[in-house]
Length: 183
Image (cartoon, rainbow, N blue to C red; front, side, top):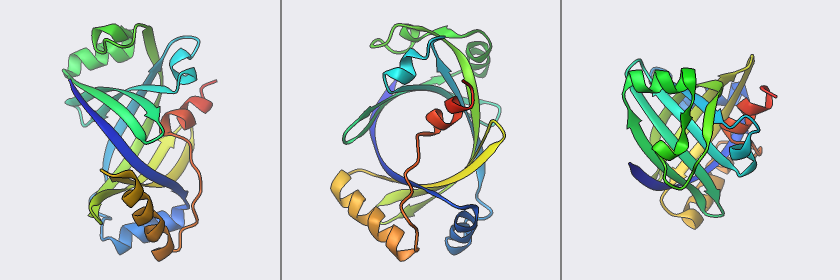
């Protein structure tokens, strides 16, 4: 299991701005698809606790289960790599969180998937992500900026928004957006 703290800043953007940024950063040919399969209890207890549990799939053979919980300074993440058959069984039949994460003890089942078409590039000491998200017949776009230090990252993100004439548009977490169309 690996653990890390994810410090990110993000904003929703229009389709036009997303495509404009792809061109400006010359990333049109670097888009890859990853699928986020989200899990929760039948009464959505994890969502109520602001905990995200997902299996991220890249291609046919790379699967990782992630537990993500929010804090003021970022998200605490724990990851466990999975074998493809193991992941597919978990998606089909659910699983006990305790089998992977000691701090959580629930039986969870698959609720919804989100297809994320993502590109990334180094930017000012962090990583800039441009995402197109497809879920429940909805397509939306966002920019994420991941850094190692909160205050400097916040300044750099604000500068990025200003430099590229992007209005800060609050956006919900991908899991929340996907869950909204499931209920």
